[in-house]
Structure formats: structure tokens, C-alpha cells
Length: 599
Ligand SMILES: [Zn+2]
Ligand SMILES: [Zn+2]
Image 1 (tube, rainbow, N blue to C red):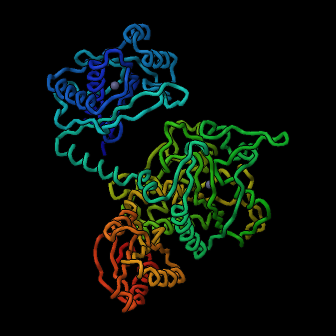
Image 2 (image 1 turned 90 degrees about the horizontal axis):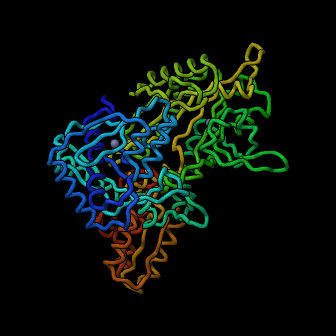
């Protein structure tokens, strides 16, 4: 498969970003330009503008972009010295900062870290010259002016270099395709994604909230969201118990020394919070659960007869994310992993690894996540991010590939995707909008057992080193819930719906009857709400539909007389009147079987 970075579409988008910057500079000659890279499905450019943009400004910029494209300007590249570049961009402080970085080395022209030696080059089309390494199309005639669009009609804010202590810039997003049809299809998908956005649905459905006073990137789960999350936890916990896992529980902080032994510290210093002192000793918020579980293992001497041990914990970990990179529930600063560690003998490794893969596929199928792929992540050439010896890495990599083949998985092998202590098998699901999310991970680890000197007494009475399997199925519960919200567009399967049944009495005189129905349903474990408000029928049904509640039960005189309810689905479908007992039988069957459908 062609890499996106090498595709024509990538060059088109990158070139269109430059055209957009030209159009913006023509409209606002005093604007300062920052960076404008291509991204998945489009591009953006960050500007420091003299005033906020209006929708009319964006429409005007878009029109001007089409004119520039139609004029057919070549993209001309040239290499310059740092001094020449500073001269060229003397009115552009952000570019000057980037040039200084390029000159000093270690960063590219987007300010991102790189090991490659960087030559300073520029690209110029028409009147606009940008600091850029390319690649670009040869000429703007390669861009289809009718397949170009600014994507978000309200521009977004973005901190310069993602740093909240720096300037707030205006980010304009755009997209470019090869044909107008592709553009139309993409814009439609974008609209659907907006409708499904978990941040919006999370608020509309009352699932979670954020508070500036609590802190950025720290989600607060409201009762309905907490029910959803708890159901997911219980589902997995029960399944794990049936598969021989045992629960463990560990605290949220630990001594820094623990992570020095694990090798985590200081490799990951930019993704963790500063240590703090307690009684002269340094502690930190836990960035991972593994070393805690390792010490449970170390608390006693194990025999080969005890193995395999499968220890699971819903463990909350804390990772530093720049505020500019926080995003709803998918990028947060504290999240809960459905973490487990399996301690196994070499003979047990393959079977245990396959057992984890089986559990992952079982969970996906249960949730209707049937479109996914696997990826074997191995070390990249420079091994300084990794701990452990080559032999352990080779053994672990072989074991993963052998197990994946045995299972018949289709997978790709990708360099640089390993964990710092070992290679891994990741599962990447595609949601209803065909967007990819890396969810589950299984890792084979020879290194932590060695670093922590883990052992078990073998059949031969000698001491041996166990192998660890690290695994998480949901990954981060926060992220997983976000993916589910967007995948289902908020319409969860009945068993997962925070509210399963909404009861709607037609008139006040039916409220008592409905209270009785509610009591009966609640006693059977259904999650039920009664809407006895003074609204009109149509409004109540609309409200329940917006809340994506699977079942609406409506009762009037005739229903009360017959001990019945009229059943309506959130899809708008009317199942008609049925005795309450019949509804219970039908709904129970749907819930108990974790059916993805309502009929
Ligand atoms: Zn560029
Ligand atoms: Zn682990």
C-alpha cells in the first residue's frame, strides 16, 4: 500500500494549504503565518490574525483559493541558508522561530523533533513563499478547484506549538480531493461525524462533563455515563472470571524508584507528571499498572504449578497531555485501563496469548465491532526508547507472529510501534464511519521479569524466569466509551443503554398505572424513567427519541383497562399494544442476550 505521505493526494493537500495561506495573506497583509501541514483527510494552517474571522471571510478566502488554483502557478523550490531564510521571513516571527530551530537542528519546519539532518528550503507559488520541505505538486493546475473546501465554518483556536503559555492562533481547516464527488462524499461524512461527535452526544445524553475548576482533560462521569461504564466493566469482569482471571487492586501513586527499576523512568518523562516528595522520598502518579502487579507477584514464591496467573485490574493511570492536544474523552490526562498481566511459563506462552486474542475477538463481536485489523508492533532501528536485550525481543516477536498466524489473523508488521519493554499485537477497529481507532493491545515481555528478578520454581526444582503478557481490551475506558458513542451514534444496544425504558402516560389519570409498571420493571432490573411532565405527547416522544432510549411505553385508557402498554422503538417503529408481561418477556430476551437489535 502506498504511504499517504508519498501520495498525490498528500501533495495536493499540502499545496492547497499554501494556496490558502496566500489567500489569507492577501486579505490580511499584516497576518502572521505559523505552520500549515497536510493531515489525514485534509490540511490546516495556523495564523495570527488582526481580528476574528467571520463566515463571510472564510467564503471569500475559499473563492480566492479557487481563482489562484485556476491561474496555474508552478511551485518552485529553493534551498536557502538560515540567514537568507531569516531575511526572507523578517516580518514573520513564527517562521523566524522555526528557522532558528532548523538551524540549531533536531526539529523540522513544523517544530517537531526529528533525527534527520534538515536543509532549509522554501516553496513559492505566485506571490507566496513558505518555509517548507515539500513535497508539492508541480503546478496548481494539478489541484481540482472544485474539489477544494474550507471544512469548518467556524475556525478553531490553537496554541502556537501546542503550548498554552504561547500565543493563541486561528486554525483554518481545509480539505482537497481529486474530484468534486469525493469532496461531496467526504463533507457528508464530516457532517455525520459531527452529529455523532461524542463530546456533543456526551452532553446531550447526560453522560459526562468537564469543569475548568477541576482541570482540563479530567472527565467527570455523570450517573448515566457511570452506568454505561460500569456495565462495560461488569461485562468484561464476568467474562474474565469465567476465563480464569483473578482481580487485583493497587493504588494510584508509587515511588519513583519503582519506575526506575521498570525502566519507565526517565524514558517517558515528557508524558508523566512531576514527582512529589513524601517524607523525603519521591513519589509520582502512576503512568502504568505493570510494576504494581509485578510486586504482587514478588510478594511470594511461586511454583510452576501456580502458573499461569492472570491478574486483572481496572487501573487508573495518569499521563501528561498538552492542553492543545486534549480532546473529549479520547485524549485525557487521567484514564482507566482494563489492564491485566499474565505470568506464564515459556510452554504456556502461546496458549495464553491465543486466549487473550480469543477474549478480544469475543468482546468485539459482542459489541458489534466486526470491522477491525491487527498490527504487530516491533522496535525501530534506533533502540534507545527500549529496554531489554536482543534475545528477549527476538523471542517475544517470534512468539507474537507465531500466535497471530495460528489464529489466522490478518496483520501488518510495523516498526516503531512496540511498547518500551516488548513487541505487541494491537487491534485497530474501524467504526461505523470507517475511522480507525487503536483499541486493544497484547504484549509479550521478557524484560520486566528480568529487571524485577521474577522467578518461579520449575518442575526440576530450579529457579526460572516467567514471561509476562500485558494486555488491555478496551484500552482506555474513556476512549472506548467515546468510540462506542460515535459508533452507535448514541443509540446503544438495549443492555448498555443507561435508560432502557421511558414510560409515557397519556393523561394524569394514567400516572398511577405507569408507576406500577415502572416498579415491576425496576424490580426485574430494567432501567426505567417515567415522564409525568405536563408536555404534549408528541414532544415527550421526541424527547425520548433524542435521548436514544430503546423503548417507549405509552399507556391510555384502553391500555390501563387491558393491563397493556403501547410499545414504540427509538427508530420510530410502532410495535402496538401488548400485555405488560409480554413486553417484559420480549425485552428481557433482548437485554439478556446482549442483542444489538431491538427486535
Ligand atoms: Zn509547506
Ligand atoms: Zn503492563
